[in-house]
Length: 305
Image (cartoon, rainbow, N blue to C red; front, side, top):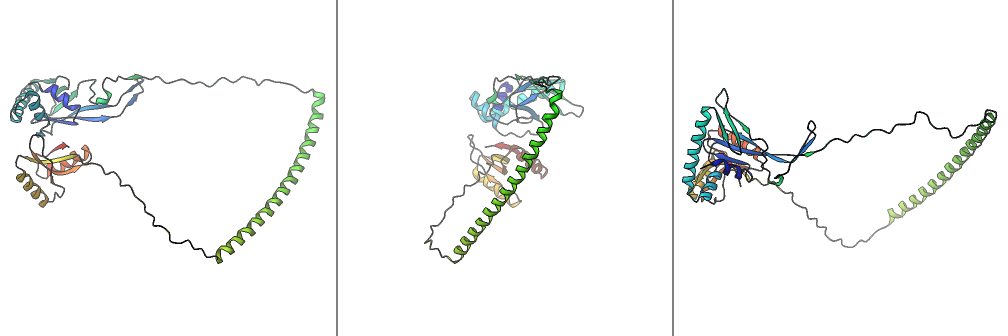
């Protein structure tokens, strides 16, 4: 059984695909961006990463394999286990290359280092979209003429006479402007006083008047409720065939202070999963899982419903 093709397929539909006893492949949304060096626009994508610490079986891959090959869930788990043994043997020898996903090597501390295959994009909406070249547009300011054009020139003998006429005309216009401004200010004062007197009369009439408005109708305002974020990421404590066992675990967790513990809806495989708590984002769920594991629950894992 070659798992890489099935993992590749599931990553288009899930943000996390776990291989029990090996680790988990994760995809995260990345917005479109512009590369100024290569002058290219890249489409939005989902980039691939790997987390070695997430090794608990969340049932996603095993259920898919059982359905694809027409086998039992238990047989699919055993086949996955055989594949992970082969992968670890290859990794101990030097390098593990998983087709359509990427390469693994061990660092000096014995930890797995993952390098995704170049060009991967698990965002279905951006399938087959390539980068777009975008060169900046160069805009230059139009050159100004070195010297402003001269349309006419006054003769030297007439220029002084023209200047004298201009001075006299400016003086007359200044006197006219002063008189006009004085007249306009006077008219504005008269209008303002008249309006103030009218306003005072209206206030006096309003103060002694009584108004019968009758019975006013009741005003009803419908306030729209804010859309609360859906808590679709769950930190799982256990999975049971027997519903009674799931309810017992919920009660035990709530007695220990996990008041958000609950029994989730039955899975298509017939399991009843019990969650410590539920969160609207994957990041919040994984942060909470880390705290829960430190609280002596090392097998906790995250699922999305």
